[in-house]
Image (cartoon, rainbow, N blue to C red; front, side, top):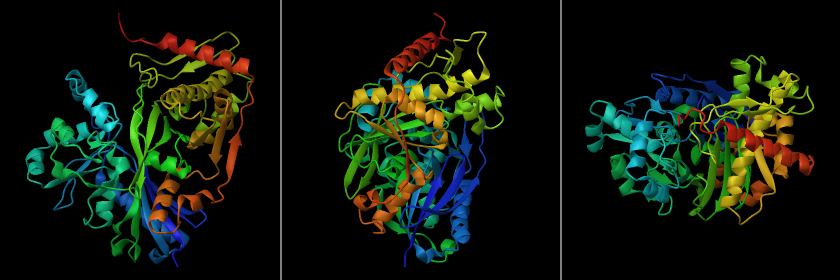
Length: 499
C-alpha cells in the first residue's frame, strides 16, 4: 500500500526532506545545512557534491525517522532553488566548477554590455525576464569562458548543464535522466516561454551549445525511478518545480488571478495568470508557473529585496533584539509607529520603483522616539513594500480585482505584520497552518502524477487548517500611512548618485 509522498526541498542554505500523508499533513521532516562559499566580493557558490550529499542524506533520514520503507512511498517530488548553475562532465558525473548561486553578481558587467547592445527587448519578449545576473545563462557563459578547457569540452558534447533540480535527478537516477521542468527552464534566459523550447537565438547570444541543455518536461509526470541503493526499493519521481512556483501550487492557487507571497529574507510574490503570458509594464517578470497534462500555466512574479533581512539587520547590526522572534514583542510595546518610517533600500529599490541609487533610511525621529517605534516601522516597511508590488501586479492584471492574499514563510508567523498587511491591502490574508507550503506543492505534483491524488479538485478538498487576517484599520488612517510611506521613499531615491 502506497501511503505517502516524499518531497525534497533543496534550498539556498539547507537541504530538506518532508513526508506527507494522504491528507496532505506532515509526517516527518529532516534537514541539513550546507556551506556557503564567497570566493570574491559579490560571488556566492555551493559545492554541488555537498548539495547532493545533504539532500540524499535527509531523504534517507526522513524515512528512518518515520520508520517508513521506500515501498510505502507513492512518489517523489523535487523543488529547489532556481537559477543556480551546475555544469558537470556527463561521462564522469563530476562538476567542473562549484555551483554559481542565484545571488551571485559576478556577471553584472556582462549583463550591462548585453543591455548596451540592445538585446534586452528580444530576450524579454522570448523569456519574459529581464537581463540580470540573477538568471542562469550569463553564469553558464562565465563557467565556459573561465574554466580551462570547458568551452572545447562543451562543444565536443562532454559537458552538460543543469539547475539544481536537474543535478538531483541525475544523481538520484545514477545518470540515467538529464531533465528539468518548464518552471525551472523558464528562469534561465534561454527558454522561449511561448514556443516552449530552448531558443536557438538566445543560445547563440550567450554562446552556449544546445547539446548541454537538459530535456524539458512537464512539472507533473513519471520521469523515471530512483536507484535502489538509496531507499531499499525504487521510488517513482513524479514532480519537479522551482521553489516559488511550488509555493504557489502548495497554496492551491490553481486558478488565474490567485496570488501568494512568500515572506523570507526578501518577499516573493507570484500571480497565476492562467494560460496567458502577461508581459509586465512595471518591470515584473513573466514566467511559467507549471505544466500539467500538456497544459501550461503562466505567472507574473515580483520580488521585494529586503523583507525578513531587515529584522536580521536589527538583530545583528543594531543589536535591538537578540533573536528574530523578539521583534513582535518589541513592536507590540508601542501603539503605532510614532511617525517613524523605515525604507530598507540597502541595495537600492526594486519593483515598482527600480532605483539602484536609493539607500536605506529611518525618518520621522523625534525626542519621543523609542526602539519599539523603529521595530514597528521596520515590520510595517515589509508590508508597505509588498503593497507597492501588489499594486503593480494589479495594474498588469486588471482582469480580476484581488481580494485575498495567500501567505507563507517565517515572517508570516508575525501576527502584527500579517494584520497590518491585511489592513493596508484592505483584503484578507490567508495563512495555512502548515509551514511547509513549498514542499507541499512538490508533493501535490508528484501525487497527481502517481494517482496518489486524482485531481486538483481532490487536493482542494483536503482539510488544511487556515488562519485568516481581516482588515480592521480605518480608511483615513490607511491613506495617511501610505502617503508618508511614499513620501519617505521619495526622499531616498537617487541618494548615492552625484548630479
